Image (tube, rainbow, N blue to C red; front, side):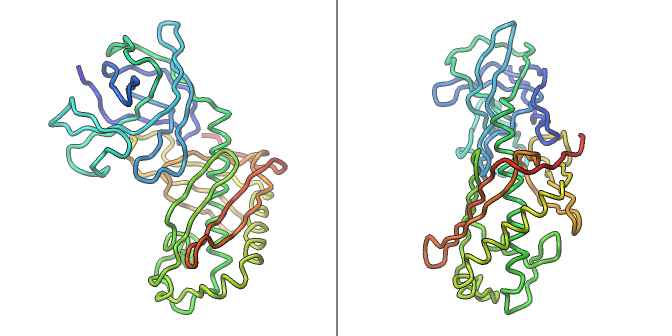
Length: 299
């Protein structure tokens, strides 16, 4: 029996534990079992923008612990409830009519004997989550500092602006973003469209190292000021739009984001490096380490 509805997720508010109801017999993915519950604290790997890796952890059912080594997005159309798609195989957008999206918790057992209606205690590996969250928050701060540092590099008026009304280089040029426990790596394409908008690529190339230092100083200054932050809404359906907001000295930064975040004593200092991997491809690496402190807004 399939009672799967869109998963209610609580990871935006920082939750790492939930008691949940299993809503379907185990599904199959790559020879493993996928457990689907009505509510989940697990952040799954996003199938559209896979910047932040999936949460890992375990689920306890009837006194037995099962390791969750991967969590991912699953989907099906309401007219075909027994045909499931996972990760990059999903061929629908979040707002497409009739599609239902859910969090899949992948365990090693290939034929797990779980039934709909069973209750399970879901527990995220918080150490792993926190490290990813710090790197994700640092990446957002880097993007804002990058826009600030490049504000004077535009020769024409730019319509696309960030939350501080600066030309949004990050949004206009970003190609990929990848996060791990120690860093984020953001790749920007500065091609013909960017140059037609008036961006001065040659100046960036000549001032690259200085710009990296300016960005690092800006980000570390923000972190030293102990900003508060949250992700809203803290509890919602998996596909609902969420926004990361962080209160900085120049105002409240707001960036749409489906990931998890943390700014604490392990976030800084941050070291940012810029390099050109190809003629028009800029790679920005944001390294995090311990040493500075900040605090989270209670959720």
